[in-house]
Image (cartoon, rainbow, N blue to C red; front, side, top):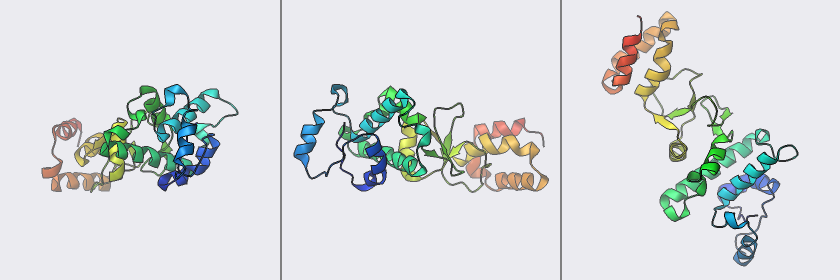
Length: 219
């Protein structure tokens, strides 16, 4: 049980919160909130609203058929859940006393990473706990391959992604990890464009990893 004042991004996830069985109330009625909070399981007391939503989702997913299935979340649910986690992480950065427990509780963190709410560069959703490791990178002057395991980058999301173990790559690392391995199979035009980009931007791209990758290639 949790009391949620549906303000800001919370309003976007109202439907999901109701389906989870979380009582919804006007945030102005603090007295009711204090009374209802006493009905929470003892082990959940002191948890933020986001943490309780994750706890409810975790319990429902463990119960199986007939309960909320994570894979059935709508795109709107996925986007809103991600925004909730991001805002909670941002609030915790501003005020450590408000830090959500899902960032430090291993079970909750693993469950958060298992949710298919992380948007890729291809505008699909993925989880972070699968066999494929995902990264993210800021805008680069040379587009990585479409199938590169990269999450969509927004500066405001970087703090949450780092907190969940996602590495934020620079352009040099993107070139070394995702562009150069496919150089030998590129058509002549694409290969020439890639090599010209490396030559023209070598001052900012040069790194030990990139040099090592280039030495492994057959031109």
